[in-house]
Image (cartoon, rainbow, N blue to C red; front, side, top):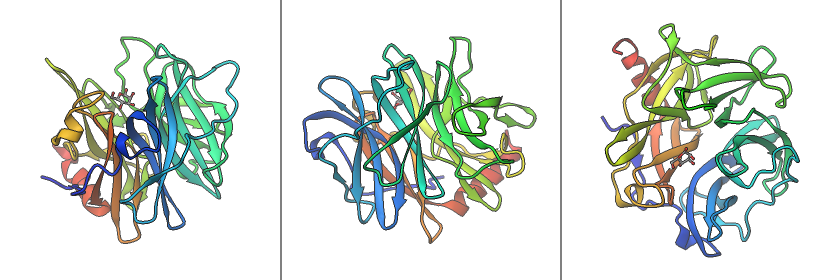
Length: 306
Ligand code: BMA
């Protein structure tokens, strides 16, 4: 069953729409600030460096990229990042916290955490994980007085690459890590998986849209599913869906990495709809829309079947 509708004029962003010559535009964090939609994209230029770059829109469909990439705060001397990608934006009070993959090169990836009030200047909060972690998605409220997030440690080859949750008093020190559970067991879905969108609170649970990776003899396929996390014990998954978004059009199937749809943020609208901005083939950005209640219901329907 198709629960998401892809925008007919997809992609909403592609390298040819950028003000400078770039190779790829993908995997945006996205949020609405007042009446403006903001996408913070991974833009990879001819030097092969992944930089964060903002595009802005009044209607959620037509985006105008800034003239230059984000001016990042001074680097952490203990983790001099080179590539920055997969940003996920969370509003906390009057600040926007961005968790992103902070990569020194050679896959030395940790979670970078920075904040902004205006999407013009950015302040580093911390390098907020040990080596070998990405897909950090900070919840938009605290749990028992602690910040909490989904993350995806992948310290060594044996790790199952699943979604974990960790907690912090200050966004700097993180701990009490635990893997998400389903029916009392650690939850693993696919060859690897990771948080997608920043979770959205509903009265039936936290709605999380995540990616799961299948292996084929031609390589990986990245597709999206949704799950519902318990409000009282958010590390417990109440139910989860089959695929809700998958590569099927040329702009999703051909590119830097073929057969990938990948999301970092979904924007809830006042009418109960949802705008999911997603990277397509690590090259373009698509928009899919859905309904929050329908996704929640789909998670609940599936809870006893698997
Ligand atoms: C993941 C991340 C994403 C990327 C995906 C597919 O590990 O690095 O940025 O879209 O791989 O290449």
